[in-house]
Structure formats: C-alpha cells, structure tokens
Image 1 (cartoon, one colour):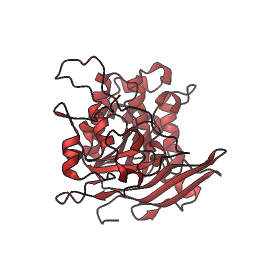
Image 2 (cartoon, helix red, strand yellow):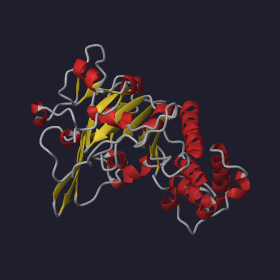
Image 3 (cartoon, one colour):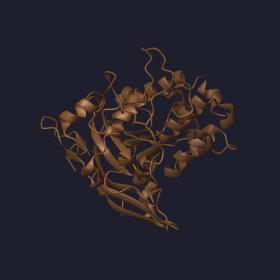
Length: 346
C-alpha cells in the first residue's frame, strides 16, 4: 500500500458455494485508491463489479461465501474485521449509494427521518431535531429544491433523480472518506444522468472524496473517472488511466464496450453495434481466456489463461489479459476507422 493510498485491494477473491458447485464471482481483483480520485469499475451484468464493492464493506459475508485476499482502509485490514468493526466503518468511513434507491429507502418512513436515523445510529448523542436539521443541510447540498419542505416527503413522492440525490445525501451524512456509487445513473434519463454525474464530480472535488464508480456505461466513465478497471467473468481484463482505456485499449472486450457506444456525431446505423454471444456461466468458465468464445480474434494460445500484465513498454501501469501482440491489437481493433470489435464471420 503506497503512502498516499486510502484504500488498497490485493488479490480479492469471492466465491459462493451453491448446489451447482463453487461460483467464483470475483477472482484476483487488485487496485488502489487515493483521496480525491475516482476509480471506475466497468463491465456487463454478472462481471463481478457489485460483488467486489459490497465485499469491501462486508455485505457478501454469509455461511456459503468464501472471501480471500486483502482490503486495507488507511492500513487497517477489513477482510478479518468483525461485524462490530465493520459497522463502524460503514457510513463513517465508507458510504455507499446502492443501485436502486427506491428499494434502498423504506417506503413507509419519511426521507429526512431515514437520513437522521443513519446519523443517530453512529452518533447517538444527536437529538432528533439536530438530525432533522442535518438532513435538510444534506438534501440542500445535493441539489434538492426546497429541502426544508421536502425533508418530510416519502420516497414515492420524489422523482427517480431526486431519490438518487437523497441516497447520495444519506451516504455522505457522516462525511466518509470513501464513496461507493453502484450504478448511480441506471434508469435515469440522460439529463438527470448528467446532473448526478456533475454532482459526484463536485463532491469529489470539494471534499477530496475518494470514489469507486460501478457502471456498465463507458459514456458515464468518460465524464468523471481518473482510472478504469474493466471486468469480465469475475476478473479484471484491463486496467489503466481513462486516456489509456479510451485511446489505446488493449483487450478485445474493451474494444467491444467502446464500439457499442452510440455516436451522436454520426448517422444512425441500422443496427447498434454489439458484442456477440453472452457472458459465460461462472460455474462453467471456458478454459484459458474467459472472453475466448465471444472473441473474433481467438487463436491457439487463447486456451491458456493470460496474466494481468503490462505489455506496453511505454505504459507500465496499463495492464491487460490478452496474448495478442500490441501492434497486432492496434490493427485488429480498428473497425471502419473506429475502435470496435469486429463481428465474427457468419
């Protein structure tokens, strides 16, 4: 763990024992996060993004889970922390914005009361009146209009974007050092998405808040992230800075994600680009590269699992899992002049 790091994740592995066998949801994830930095974790549904984030605060602990590796927050190990220690970490040191704010809030309690309850759970000396005032301040800080009146509304009286803002307010109630935002713009229209992203960027800048952003949308990543982890089938297949991932991507899966973005500066295609096939079952992964069955550039060596390594001499921090030579990658990833994944031959 470097001196300036707030969070250090090393070789994190999360498996679940099921009737069908052991399901390895996260397999060897490593990264670091510094104050004021945004790390985005991207990939399709089922790639292990949310399990990685939830494991950081102990939400995947259960009799059938198997968790290995190291998660250190300011040097303190969280994997071995007991439930009481983790309760102190949640909220005060790590705040989390869950994927669906409608199901994260209790529908029969007022928004302000739920925020105040979260505060008083950690700081019991806070009175109900003080908790309510703090809730108003938080709602106002995340852009809820007329916060003094809306604090007494129920969740169903807020729009989707306002519920998401309220969820962010609750996550920030105890001024944590780290914020985990799990798909914070899912099911929101593009205007509200832009507002939520601008809010996260402002909070990150003003509070020096370290942020983990989980998303499947690389367009969202481009707005706020400093570094990007691309996950597929529980493993990180590429890791680098935002510029490295967008302008010099090294893994075919990343090419497919980038090629699937809708371009507003071009004529609308008859069919949106897509990655053929579907992610594999985590109970029955293919041998070697997990992306091999969907990759049009597969060759003999792909039956061996490539390590997550630096393969570019001038970019030691840019890591990927692909056996193709860098120059060959630069040739193959261009589809009609743009980065994309060439469709397999019929």
